Structures are given as structure tokens and as C-alpha cells.
Image 1: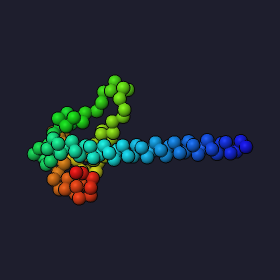
Image 2: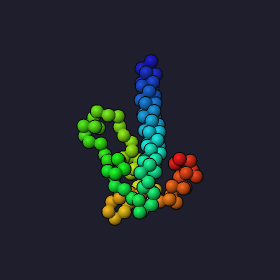
Image 3: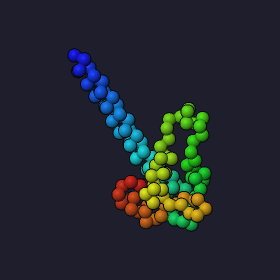
Image 4: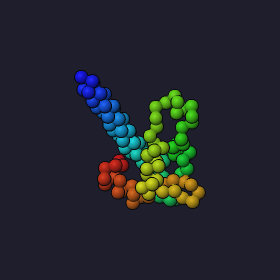
Length: 112
């Protein structure tokens, strides 16, 4: 009987971990779309219209905000987009999406 209860506990823990990973992946995917929409809304398409993180409203939350609000996945999404070279940075640290990358994202259904 003890074997079944320990197996059940292990399955419940593994199920919880799987659900947490699934939710995290879904929230990150949603945040990627939101970050791309922010770039479109601020017209940060192309190097000439590059904007700072502050101008885009993508500043990291303060320590107090992190404790009092739900997790914001936009910072993680921005880092993913930077590593994938979808969002690019100028020498001054301003960010932009190239028109070609945006068209590619639209054709894949990632951006609207």
C-alpha cells in the first residue's frame, strides 16, 4: 500500500511540474506577441525609428513591483527576441525590428 501512495505522490509532483512548465511556455509565447505589438505601436520598425527600452515601456519591474504583481514575461520575451536577432540593438542601445523580420513574423502568424 505504501508503494502506491509514494508512486501517486511522485506522479502528482511530476504533473505539477509539467503544468508549471506548460503555463510558463504559454505565457512567454503570449509575451513575445505583446512585445512585437509594442514595437509596432511605437513604430520601432527599422534602425531610423529605433527606441530605447524606456520609450517602449519595457523597463524591468522594480523589486516592489515584482513582489506585488504577477510575473511579467515581457522581459524574458525581449531577451528571447534579442538572442534570436529578431529585435536588434543599435550602438546607442536603442532597439528596433527590421521590416524584413516583421514581414517574416507576420507570414508565420506570430505578429499581427
